[in-house]
Image (cartoon, rainbow, N blue to C red; front, side, top):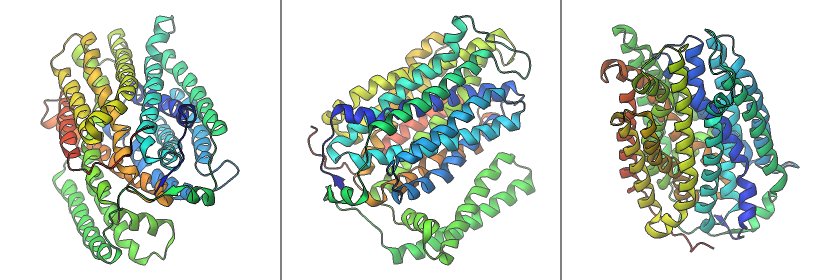
Length: 495
């Protein structure tokens, strides 16, 4: 079901403005957390495991927040209370992280920061589905991508800019440089203020009024049927439990890489949760499992697209700092001038791809009108794959700015077009929950990447972090090809 009421440009602007702050915090996290971990003594092999906190929190938090926000109505509305709570908690985490006295505290604060960002981010996705008609949703998600790009450009550049204004960019062993600390302070303020802007400039309709403004969907929502799902759920749950436990046993017996416990343990836990549904008598847990098993066909097909897309992105976030500092700046010594210059350059590169993403967000609605959602996403993901692979070709770090042009188009597309493909195939009264469930297909590939990338780098990729980016490039191309399996929705002409 979709809305009939058309919103103005500035109404869409206001409802998406908070995403600028969310991405400001997210970009600071992506560009600087590996640097903080290294500063506090983590080795390159430790980084994937330390990053697991981020996807794990999304896996847990987003469906819960989606379920609750579907059933919330307060003086601030349906989704806005979650924006505000997440913003306050994320701001506190940003202020504290650069003062972490030990590695385990930094890892814990990453957990808090990512959980808080997820509390705000998931309802923002459902917000677009709540407030915009089908014909405006691609534009709404593109507006979010625009703010993501703008916020990320400034956030990623901050340490580099501060260094150019004379702020200290090096520090003693175990200490985070002032450039990073001040960037996190500024990011906390931006995150809180921009979400407050959306909270106080955008209204939400009460559930009864929202229901009265809904129109029939453009296509039937495809369901699989609860009786079949019960049997399928048991078979899948049993298989996942057995395979997960067997995998953990193999890791223990043969002394395999301990990161593989994440795969085995994750599969076993998922299997147990599916099997446990048999004993649940309604409530949130039962609703999440039932709707996961009964998800629309479009979501099932998009799951593969999301898996390969986010596997690639996670490889970039955790390995770009190591790849650029070791390959293009020739050092892994975190106290050296060259390393910190390289780490700052990674911030510039991340700013560049987000800047290109902001430009791509302007182009994407026209691209969609010309060639459709699916072919647009395929094209953008292939551009991103080429950008990743070019890291192996360019040796002058300045040429990597060109690589980031392709990555930026892929990033803008990943943040908008899958949601536009999905949003009209899910029931409006469960928009929040389904957006949370859709996040599973963002989180699971990140957990897989965190489990196996470290092992691949050590055993197959010659110990060179830059080769992890090549794997990411190929993964983006596969994601693009999988997009062609997804049904193109019948969108009305854009207003």
